Amino acid sequence: MFAAHKIIAPLSGLLLLAAVSTAQVAQPVQAQTSTATVSLTLADALARAKANSPQFQAALTQLGLAREDRVQARAALLPGVDYNNGFIYTQGNETATPRFIANNAVHEYVSEGAVQQSLGLGQIAGYQRASAAQALARAKAEIAARGLAVTVTQAFYGYLAAQNKTVTMQAANDEAQHFLDLSRKLEHGGEVAHSDVIKAQIQANDQLRALQEAKLAEQNARLSLAVLLFPNFFQDFTLVDDLGTAPTLPPMPDIQQLAQKNNPELSAAFAAMEVANHEVLVARAAHLPTLVLDYFYGIDASHFAVSTDGIRNLGYAAAATLNIPVWHWGAIQSKVKQAELQRHQAQVELSAAQRQAMADLQSFYSEAETSRGQLDALHNSADLAAESLRLTNLRYQAGEATALEVVDAQNTLTQARNTYRDGEARYHVALANLQTLTGAF
Image (cartoon, rainbow, N blue to C red):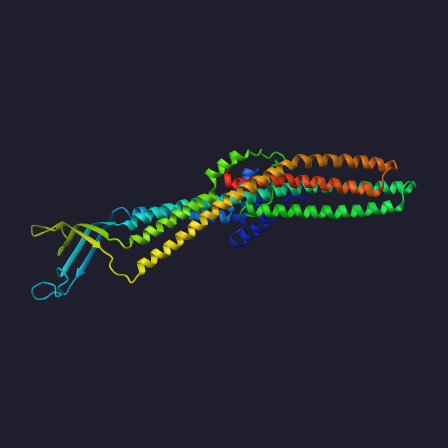
């Protein structure tokens, strides 16, 4: 098994040395290179992956944006308060009145608070649409989280299986070398033919090559996991091996109940349908009148003062505006048609999501059930293969078995052990896939 490499820490140290003085970075670099080995469980790996996965963080960003859209849509339903300040200068005439009839005085000071409330079905429907969009973003974030869990589970148990395969291939290589040494000794004693030595040498060569491939696969699995878990490509970590302690599979009725409550794919489809419904309401609301209420309190006078010559300048004003849409060359109705087309598409996607959810549930459960049911048989096969190799070696030493039988027993044991490890990893991944529909159980 390869030792964990420490490549990134020295490299990052060199980059820091190029940017700042040696005295400033000597301690941080030394601290990073002397970091203790990190031991990770699957839960630890999931937590680290969530913090470093760009896809999952993008889903969280979209959820945050949708939450702020809802805040803004709610604010549009409430009165807005502003404080306006301004000064208008207009050229006067001989009577100290403005030359422009639209202006009130030669010097006009405006300092007043303004409250505005806009009332219309469009604002209400817009808030409902934003709420539905937030629910949709929340469902998509949950989909991303569960999808990431499957990815991490595959990488986590894939690496554990690769480690175990390396151990198996090392044992197979040692067994092949032992068989080669044994066949040479028996040949020198005149007990076996030289063909047995040739066969043993071929087997030793094959097992050595298989060991090298297993080590390479283990290294690649480790690198893939490091990319998922660490922001600085840290590789000095170990995994808690719980490959053989997978949880039990609940019965199908319990799984169905969990899927009905916790399927994020269906939640997203329903939320998308809700968004589409509110899009139609928003578009249709453009046909209806909108009432705008304004209230002003403050100064709008020729002097910036509370009172002038005994006359109080502070005062208030109110205005109400009713906007009635009359003719827009079919633009409003066109937007309604667009919204209705999107709603129809959302209906089709919801129906497809419901059908796919039923199929996925049965498929994922069958996969988990099948892989779990095979584990006992795979473990039994590995034990029988080990016993078969032991007996075959004894028979070969007694001259009752051929070299081909020994080689076949060795290959059978190696294959049985590797298949058992693959079966354990397969069951863990099958459970992770099932939990994308049901949540944790």
